[in-house]
Amino acid sequence: MIGPGEIALVVGGSRGIGRATALRLAESGFDIWLTYHSNHEAAEEVRSLITGMGRTCELFSFDVGDYEAAQAALGERVQTTVPYAVVFSAGIARDNLLVWMSREEWESVINTNLNGFYNVIHTVLFSMLSKKRGRIVLISSVSGQSGHAGQVNYSASKAGLIGAAKALAREVGRKNILVNVVSPGVIETEMTAEVPRDKILPLIPQQRFGTPEEVASVVNYLCTDEPSYIHGQVIGVNGGLAI
Image 1 (cartoon, helix red, strand yellow):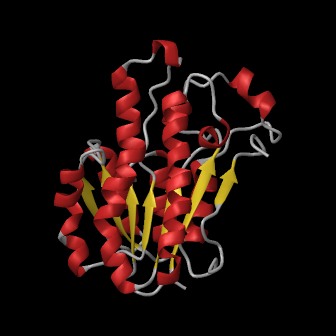
Image 2 (cartoon, rainbow, N blue to C red; image 1 turned 30 degrees about the vertical axis):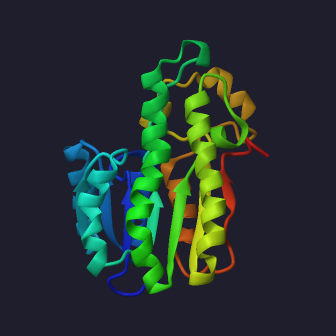
Image 3 (cartoon, rainbow, N blue to C red; image 1 turned 90 degrees about the vertical axis):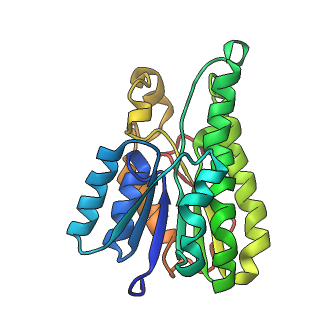
């Protein structure tokens, strides 16, 4: 059961999987801290939906790739109020074949998807350790498990999250902080709007794309007290795309 006033910090929670996760966690009884970069309208919409459920939702607007910005937004807050669950769902894609990939395409993806993990988790981790409890869930991708052509930067960043989660799990497990990864396949979001369905669907045994809500349900489970012996694991939500 989620105790009264427990907070879930959802990083990248204004759209897509992050949005669905914030709403699902609110349904489960969490109050939400929601971070986003610049889409104020989308973030306000999520906050309105969460407050309509009777939960609170506080918004934090900053670039996760900027360590000082993460510190400024969250550093002082976590000294007095510590989130029970942290979900890192921030991510961007800049697809291109490596031979044509620009330095900016490489660095922007690594900075948001992987450095963003460090910037946020490093900011909140000491406070979580002091409480000796918590849940950390990272949103990776099937691309980080198997690699996809045209996504060397994205695959590298998402594979890096898996390695980081496994190492972090060994560091903090004895403090009753569980660390896990949810690895979605092709999910119906803005990021996959241009994906060629005729080429991708034959590769998926279930013959369909997933929904953000299907990913959010797994994240929600990992943020509760029920999975008390699931730690350092990668859970795929991909319809069989990666088996």
